[in-house]
Image (cartoon, rainbow, N blue to C red; front, side):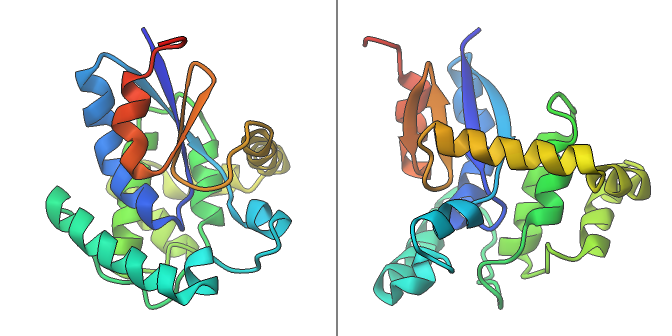
Length: 197
């Protein structure tokens, strides 16, 4: 079965939309999704930014928020512009990095995104992350503890370095057969990609 890597960042607006589309679009084409959390902060710093480009360039930011209104309306997703943007998704990313094959990983990611961009809740708060885990029937305290051990922190760091090595510069990014597609609007093209097509 063909596989699509879905590289996502919890602070990323367009990753919010993609997280609710990727399995539907990929599944319809018989493509399996590999969820790949990573951190954009180190990548942005390497490009000379200490903030989201949507804040660095106000016109781009205004466009993005209007675009998000259209996209979320089309997808039936709630959108409440976060009172803090971007939010710190480090804890959530560590949780999502814990176990690549965890059956709850995708739904955890979607609920974190919904909390951030649908409800304007602080996803950097471990209590909030724990409540999301609890809502999935998972042992929140145990998972949060495991997420903060040195080996798991290193796992997320290495995954972010892997993103850099692959040429990823933003989120969401999709990779199929080594081909990189950037942006929620490239999901269908990524799913349809065949090497040497």
